Image 1 (cartoon, rainbow, N blue to C red):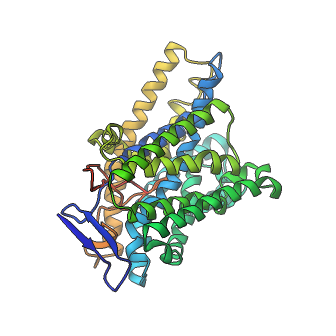
Image 2 (image 1 turned 180 degrees about the vertical axis):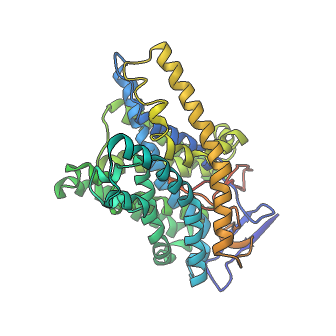
Length: 430
């Protein structure tokens, strides 16, 4: 059934879209791609040594792209989900937004922190000091290195996501004039892209690249998130047709060529220019390209049930791939791809994946539902929260990386279907 959606209270009007019975367009491939983003981060922490060809080592190194994918995807999904409601905010809407984000991200984040704490204390004699408190409250990314990477290293990106979440209601409110048409949405994207490039150009003269802290400092990663918001606005305002499908194919081709070029350069991009130019732009191309090509074989594969399950577990996988992975995968490839160690590494990855799926099923989902029910008891299960999206009890995504995070982590699309003229979606985690 096709229907036109206009938020109550005279909010932004969105074009007619095909919706599911729950009132949601679905973009399943954006859930599936989360798994590969998280897996890429794991690769970047398991760079093979020995006589491994440098190009293969570079392929592993560029797994860092996964974190930026999460940041850009987080902006895309939150805009996709909340643009309609938070463009005309009320106290209740903002409260529900923050509760949803907290419920999606913090329970597992806290559990993993409590898991690694005893080991850090016993093995390394780490004290419970401001560093640990910074991790507890999710503000470690505001400290200089190595504090941001203490305790559970990958969680720094969740700290960055918290900053994004804090600002999102304000940014989407200020961006209202850019959400009213496809042309204005493209202007929003142009502004965001210019900001990405400008920040990269200014980073070296200002000295932001002299310390690795720049890569984790929240304000310096904000452009990634805003770029995701901008392409989310473009997607919301675009009418799914053959023209956009062709554009989607072009964007995917751009992502592929760009990524191959970055790998070929064989440079590790730790710094503002690298993460913004080398990673943020192709990440945006990948996400919007997948959203616009629901009938593409790769897109459909990313939206299959196995990939959805893996995508939903990507946040857990990301959070534990260093803490638990330290005993399962780290160091096994340090001398190259020996048969025994390569086999053990693969087994370790499989175990991490199974553990992540279990954590998603037994911890993330129940905790999210409990917290949202507890803190928003009057919330209707299917209240419209955005263009073509219903805010319902299980809607959650972003991330890490994540977060997020997706980290990220909020209501997200989850499976993909499509025709030549209409797109549906399957939520992705913010």
